[in-house]
Length: 249
Image 1 (cartoon, one colour):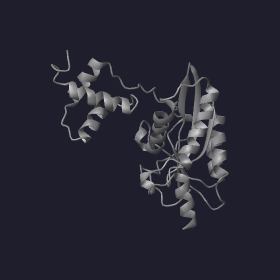
Image 2: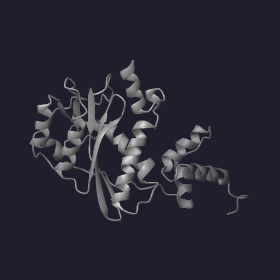
Image 3: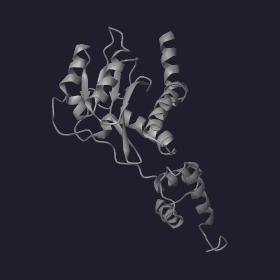
Image 4: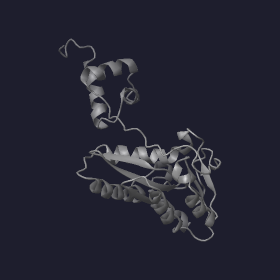
């Protein structure tokens, strides 16, 4: 059908513009929302149909890595209760593990985030999701604390966090352990949001020749995320800039 006869020609152009501007990350619902922001009234079903016609398919995100294996140790109550804000540095921390796949090879990332400024204060990567991955991350994070600092550390009910050695490390430092309720990913939404940002801004748009290049890139991105990437809720500062200013004030 020619553009002269196609009543949706202008809408198709706008759909393509939005889709490609976001590098294929938007499905029909987000494309619809973006078009509506321009003041154009459009039905999401029409956008969906036109995207199918044009062969515009959003990136398919891999299934989230699930570390839950049932009750293999002791669980902890949810002390955070979706209150993902903190009034001071090292008051509330959140952590989880995510998985990357490059040409059939996997890499696992275990970070810990401070809820006061969203800074990734420590992280570890490994080719296998063994306990040492989380243990090494935790030791790095604990080494940053002053003697009188005792943040709540929140996670899901993954098997790593139910392990006695993990819980002993927390108890030794007087740190309260907190866990999401079983099957409630929103209970750990802050770190899930970081994973989504990391993957949409860094992992999905790039190709990696090897697991090592991915590993190096993750370290570079986390440094950028902490030191350069500004956040509106931090008054236009990066997490490290915000922390530095807070310590000076």
